[in-house]
Length: 237
Image 1: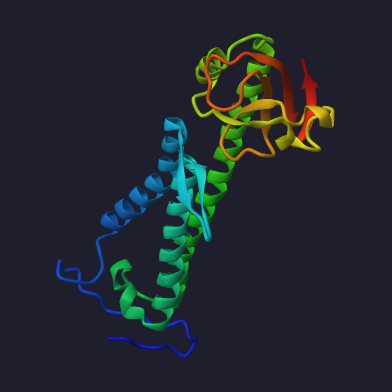
Image 2 (image 1 turned 90 degrees about the vertical axis):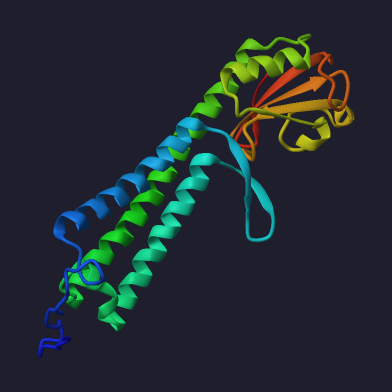
């Protein structure tokens, strides 16, 4: 039976503990919540350790995102949807929450409020993990700048970059693509260049090298290097 008390909180709803419906035993509830918490918080960490960037669907275009960011966004989004829909559904139709036992408004708010909090924690965790990922990428690019020398081939620099961080990619263009970023004369804007950095890290640390041949040529020689941080040149050699 469903009863409504004078205080508006609601009287407990009688729930069968049979396998065909009703509340789960407390031990099962604790197990379900424990599994949900562990998966939600552990999977983004595992994705960060696995590493790698992949294409993700944005609102209007595709973009490259780290595996940890994708995993965290999907998990936190799913958990938040579960929490919000369960909260409003339980308050409007308490029978939807019979699985947690006595379905008072306070209990519904407590259970699904905890689920919503878990989704928020997962989102905060993902942001923290991505800071760790970006710090590693920036450190790898700085180390790469310290190790490279003019005259090295593009292929040798790419091999060195892969040893430091496998997520560093090579992009091809000209020095003119870095207008107001590099401190070079406008007359050199047509010179060929490559950039080595993590995908979509335009505000991160990037290594730009002037090369002898435009396009994908592993045997092309490098003539000079520029270290860029936060869209500003900070070093050159």
